[in-house]
Every structure is written in structure tokens, then in C-alpha cells.
Length: 136
Length: 72
Image (cartoon, rainbow over all chains, first blue to last red):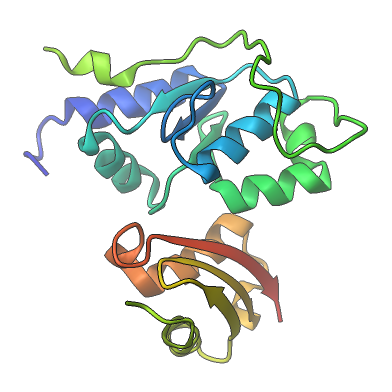
């Protein structure tokens, strides 16, 4: 986009994906999702009690542009596990329901299958503000 | 405004031999797509084949496309 030599934002996104075993790019935050698809995807992770990093893509439209260019995936949310794109809301929901997501994450599938976690579900992974790395 | 019929036709044209069932309200759509081309592909790759039909229109003219893919 800007030039071929450096793309700090794309590098920051790639680094965030590399450094976080489970990272969700979403609209809003897990506590305050701004889109139903993002809410459901974050909710599935919370229900499995999996620590995950979350990046809100809304503050800067370039985050979404660069993320989609990097992942070759057009929509938000996007879940990455161990550096690999797992999918968006539909795939994560399918994998949650089948138990594949719990298996992938090494989590325990809950007996019941609520689609949304309680809002107060504690998380260990702090949200990762990628946008804050854009300051320089 | 995009229509269910348009999306169905474009998916079926873009992935020859595929069958698509599309429902939606003109902005948010749900599609169930069955295609032999999905054989052996990961879910990610299957969804990408369908997304590729619409390119930049996703998130824009087509606000959301919820997908379920099946091997035909």
C-alpha cells in the first residue's frame, strides 16, 4: 500500500499473530463487542475458558486492510491459533459446536453449549492494542 | 441492493457445478454452498473459494455473508 520496503502496521500485526498463541481480531472488545459475529466468536473462546489476545480493529481502518491483505480473508472476526488462520465467525461456530475448537485449543468442551459466555468471564490474556504501536 | 437470487447465481457461476441456497435481507446473507471443488480442502480454503466470487464487495455492498460449505 504505502511502499514496498516497510509496512510497520503489517509487521506489527504479523508480530502480534506470532507472539500470541490465540489471538482474535474483532470489532470492539470481548467485554464490549461491536458486532454480533465478533461477539459470538469471542463468546465461544470465553466459554472454553481459553486465554486469548484480542485486537479491536475499529479504531483504525488500516488495521483491517492490512490484516485482510496478510491473511487473505475478507471479513472480521478472524481467529488465529499458533500463527495460523482458523477462520471467521462461521467456521469458529462450527468448530465450537463439533468440539474441534476445544480440541485445537486444548480446552475442555463444556457440557452445555451456550453460544455466549457470561460477560463477566475472566480472561488471562490482556487485550493487545496493536494500534498503539503505530505511534512512531 | 444485492438480492438472494443474484448471490446464488454468482456463486454458482463462479464455482461451476456448485449449488447454493441463499437467504438474506439485502445486506446480511446466509449461504449454504455445496460443490465438488471443496473436496479435500480445509474449511478456510472452501470459504475462500466462495469469498473470492465477491471480492471487495464483502463488507461493503454485501455487508455480511454467513457461509456453510459442504462437499457435494
